[in-house]
Amino acid sequence: MIEFLRHKAGLRYRQTWFARRPTGSPWGLALHRQYLGEPLKFPWVAEEFHTILIDLQQDDEALLAGMSKNMRSQLRKAEPGLMLEVETKPDDFLSFYNAFARSKGLKELSMSDLDRPDGTLALYRVSLDGKVLTQHAYLLDLQESRARFLYGGSARLEEGVDTSLLGRANRWAHWQELRTFREQGIKTFDFGGYAWQTTDPAKQGINQFKEAFGGTVVQENTYNSLLLAAVKALKRR
Image 1 (cartoon, rainbow, N blue to C red):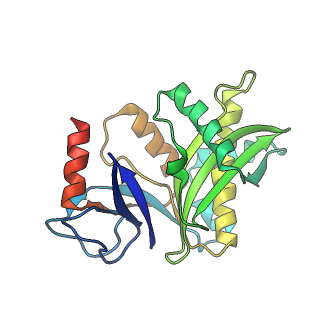
Image 2: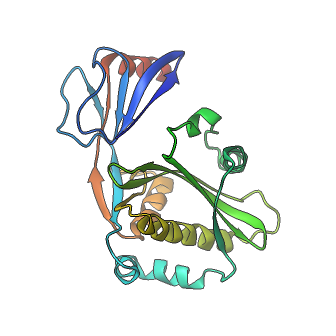
Image 3: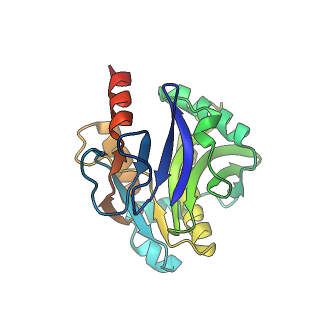
């Protein structure tokens, strides 16, 4: 389990990831993301959440066999000069991601979105000939032996960057990150969400991208304390 404090609408609340027992008061301010224990009842308020999990207790051959034929082909076509590196500067990740978000009409991140307990945030970048093509952020829960994808962006605003190259670099990045986490002893890769039964074409495309890596779709609901659920509802108005 990972636990830390967050702020929403001027209120401070306790957020956990992958908890197996509730912490904090259901009448106060608390949030359990991807709760792994028995389903919680009122006054906890559930938000349905699905994701894709990949078992990293497999060798390369087994992992590749679980992927789609097209995914394996795209990985084979990946440029030999691609480099996966640890991104050591959160500010650089933030600037890179927010440029991508603006180009896609997505919500930009703030530094507080990367504020995680020591040892639980992993940032990676993939570059070719010195040009950064894609960056990914992960949440690491060593107790649960899980790496959970948080954010990812590509250099879509860069002039002269081939979109096909960006696609291959992004796929290759995930593949290399899978292998890196496995080498670190992590047992589960979490793709960070799956839009269950969506009719949105964009979300369907993201689902298909993730499905092509193999794995299993699971339901791991999020639970809000009653007061936090009310704050969220008011903010959506």
